[in-house]
Length: 249
Ligand code: PGA
Image 1 (spheres, rainbow, N blue to C red):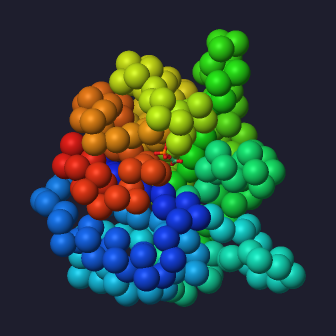
Image 2 (cartoon, rainbow, N blue to C red; image 1 turned 135 degrees about the horizontal axis):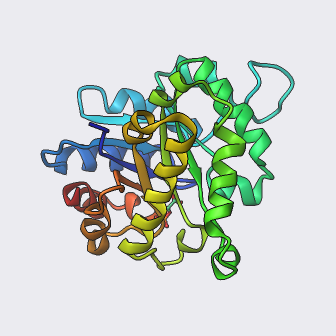
């Protein structure tokens, strides 16, 4: 059985004080769930966030990392630095990193390999832009993103990967893929992985949907067979909304 996961990507939001308040609200109000619950605060707050969730079912993860072990990369963060503050999972390939920070498939492949080499779990994000969907090119694009960044990995690496399909046109726009569109793409992703690595690996990997998931639409999206949870941006910044989304799974 693959894991159900609800993950919050806090992006460049919440200072230290606000981070600790939100974590306290989340753990105080979080009901029973079978899902793994994760949140990704900004780098400077990770160490304190990890301490704050000790003893709660919430895992703190990182939003990004650099592929190099160490060295002259001003402003960057290495896998060892994340491990050093107790991080076990890192998001790689978010569309904002691709769009605003020039992260290409080739760079992302290096990051994924660097993270896995340090035994970090990787939450790998990918998804098409609106123009790709309008041109009917969304399946090809998603397939190429997977192939370019992930398909040189050994089969054994896949148990340390979580995928997050996030159509760029749905991120922070209030526009969500319909449950049918999400299921159609998730099934395609699983088939693409099965073709490359076999059905066992494809059926074992959790594939999350991301893009304007809200309390009002989460249950229907999560009910789809190949949707194993969500990566939540805006709605993860409000404890009641994030908790409602956790309950929806
Ligand atoms: P959103 O962001 O929920 O605000 O659309 C999702 C994401 O970027 O992971």
